[in-house]
Image (cartoon, rainbow, N blue to C red; front, side, top):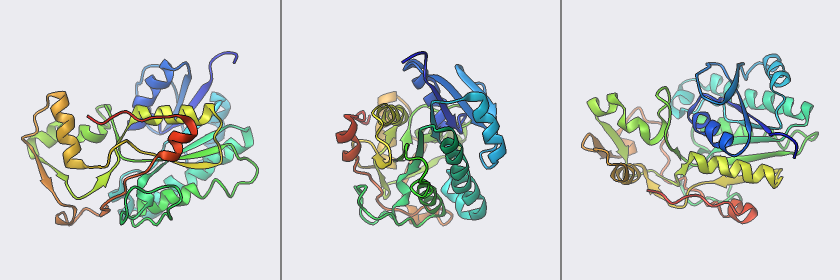
Length: 289
């Protein structure tokens, strides 16, 4: 391979991008990014573009000339998606179609980051063979985004990673999970974490490793589940994380989803079985704290 590969991350200044930029840099990539709100992230070659604008995306691609595209830009707050369904469709579905269309035109491999919330949470430990049936606007929009890809017959170098709840260190402007529970506001006002919602949390760097494994081995045309090694609820995870990091959790209390009227992401168990990804690529997620 001559020179470094260029990887382009949409939504590069969000929680995922903030951690992905140094990870891919350390693994020998030139990391490029596009987003609507530029931020100062070391080693990121960044331009501003609206992923809902095909014209702006085409101009950005012409500038960056990527070898791989990771589409991470999304309206990812389920509550916001529930309140703004039309906008969620624009950002999560139309934008995916736009980015993928440019990848088709430029023959660029494409990885879509999707979510465990394409499932309704009635079963748990979902495999890729289970029928996706989301009960949230966010999950519905991400499933619709997934379905954009097989319908494009001109280009088959795409993969979908359905990621579980990502955790890791985020930037100040997007603290992510579990950082949101240790912000000044959370410490001052308290934080409630659910004991009745189960996920398979995945470290953000393990998502990066999965992207690398899938693209380098050219495992395209496939939906993969990308979850951590353990099914756990939010409260127990944060308690374990805090114990490992030496953080005070006296401001954190356990709660139930249905006790919070404004909480609309009522899914009991969307844990993922990631056996297919592990057996296909030899990828392995790290153990939880």
